[in-house]
Length: 366
Ligand SMILES: Cc1cc2nc3c(=O)[nH]c(=O)nc-3n(C[C@H](O)[C@H](O)[C@H](O)COP(=O)(O)O)c2cc1C
Image (tube, rainbow, N blue to C red; front, side, top):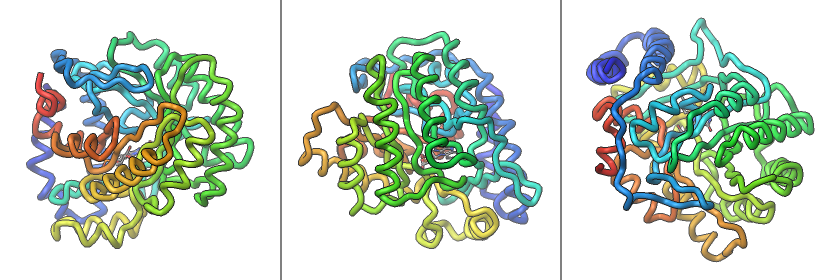
C-alpha cells in the first residue's frame, strides 16, 4: 500500500536526509509529513483481529488491547477506520481547541517537525492545528462505530483565550464530545507549543476544580475524564497532582506529553542527529518525543502507581503511559509498572516504517 511504501523509503532515506542543511531538512519533513499522513488515513488495510486474551476493561469500556495512538495524530478526527483495521486498542482524536487553528509558522516553515532517526526521536512545534471542538465532535458523531474499540477525544483550553472564558469554552467542548458519543475524554494540560495557563500546582488545581464543578459532577452518563501532564513533571509533584485529580473526581492520569528539557535529551542523541536538533530547538523550541522520554514516562507511572496504592481512591482511577513506547517489551514494562493503557506517537511511525499496517499484530500477535 502507498503509505507503507512511502514509510519504508523514508526509513531508508532519513539517516541521510538529516545531513541536509537543517532548515531544508525541517522544511522537507514538515511538509512531507502531511502528504504521508493523508496517504495513511486514506488506506483501508485488511482487518487485523487481536486475540481476546489481550482485552483490557477500564471504566466498563472494553479495549481490544492496551495500546492506542497518542493525541495529536488525528487532530481533525480522521484516521478512525484506518487504525481500527490495523488492530489498534482504541482511538484518540485531537487535541482540539474552541476555535479552529492553522498551527505555527516561522521562517517560512509551517507546522515545524523534525525526525532524529538514529536517536528514535523527533521534535515538533506544530502549535495545535485543529478544526475546533465542534467540527471534530460532529465528525466523530458520524463514525460507523466498532465494538471493543473505544473512542477518546483530547481537548484543551484555547491559547488565545484566558481565565474563566478559556475554561467555559473547554466545558462547552467537553459537552459537545459527550453528546457526540465519545467514550472518554483527555484534557491536555501540557502542550509546550502554545501559550498555556500557568503551570503551578495551584493554577492547575484551580482549572481542574472548575472543569470538575462544571462538567464532571454534571455528566449525564459515565464518561471518564483523564488529564495529561508533561513527561517533564517532577516526581515530587506526582502525589500532589494525584491528590488534585482524585479529590475532584477525575478518572485517570496520562504521563505524558513531550519534553522541553533540551539540554538533557541532547546528551542522549546519536551524534548524527545533533545538528538538526540544535537548529530545531534553537529556532523553534518545540517538544521532544520518542525514545528519550521512555525513562521519564516509566518513572512517572511507577511513582503514580505507588501513590495510588497508598491512596486507594474511591473512583476507578487509571494510569496511562505515553512517551517512548515502541516495542512489545515497552508495553509489557508499562503494564508491569502500573499503567492500564499505553499510547504511542513517535514509536507508532517507527514501527509503521518496519511493519506497515501489521504493526499492532506484531506486538500482540493475532
Ligand atoms: C507531531 C506531534 C504532534 C503532537 N500533538 C499533540 C496534541 O495535539 N495533543 C497532545 O496531547 N499531545 C500531542 N503530542 C504529544 C504526543 O501525544 C505524545 O504525548 C508525545 O509525543 C510522547 O509520546 P511518544 O514518545 O510516543 O511520541 C504530539 C506529538 C507529536 C510528535
